[in-house]
Image 1 (cartoon, helix red, strand yellow):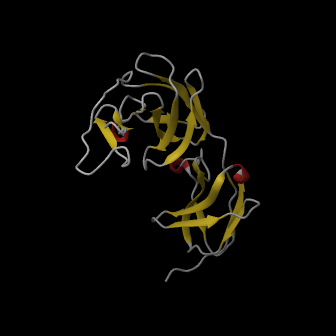
Image 2 (cartoon, rainbow, N blue to C red):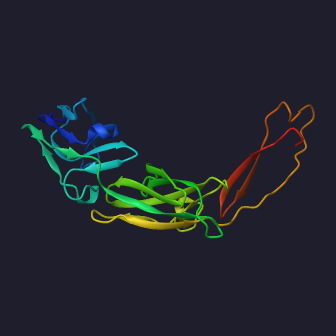
Image 3 (cartoon, rainbow, N blue to C red):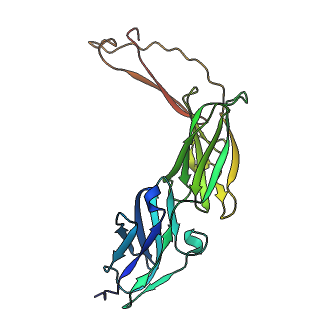
Length: 231
């Protein structure tokens, strides 16, 4: 059986400024433990088995900061948890920003929501929106590789940095400890109007029954539209 070690405790600086922070203890052999924080940012657990762990803190829309190095898992400092009590202090917040400009297919600034995903797990770690000039900034990102997606308002479509509508063909963006990134994302078209009349099934009236039509294109994702009372 596994032998219980001493207590792992510490303080997370910046915890009050983020949403739902939780401390993570990732064992070198794949074990995974999560520890809740107290209101003052402290944490403590005596549930870990003796061994070597990477200790980090994760929060919504921020991602994970690991103890040691530049905050990334690749440079994290391992911590040995044994019969002695171990204290580890962590920080969350800060980090670098991904900024840029969103343009439509004609090169004009475009309104869009911007979503940042972790490149490995495709987990949402940050978001933002453009201003009147099409500029956006998503701050607080730890070092790592990310996918950046623009969801266009006027074009009802989406595109990743690099021009792909699909995350698996998107171009990753690298953020380092000392440098963020500045990008330009352009829509794959200016948007066209397509009019289609849909014949309702027998006994169905579009005026009383909701209907939708979907348009799917491999280079621009998909869009949808409501069917009105006239079909």
